[in-house]
Image (cartoon, rainbow, N blue to C red; front, side, top):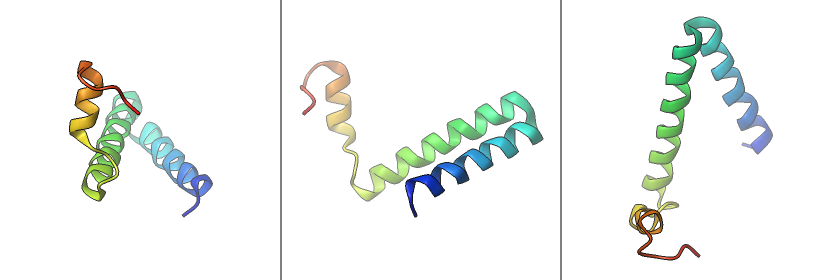
Length: 63
């Protein structure tokens, strides 16, 4: 799936949520989509949480 198509689908889902559930529903859907994307990257091995935590705490320098 191309980045353009992914962006269009995400925009459509968020627009539907905003129209159906209002601002707070829109915000909840956006947060849950972000959590789902983050979880997917961790499970697939594309994101190392230990390295990310180390970068935020200043123990490691991000490369």
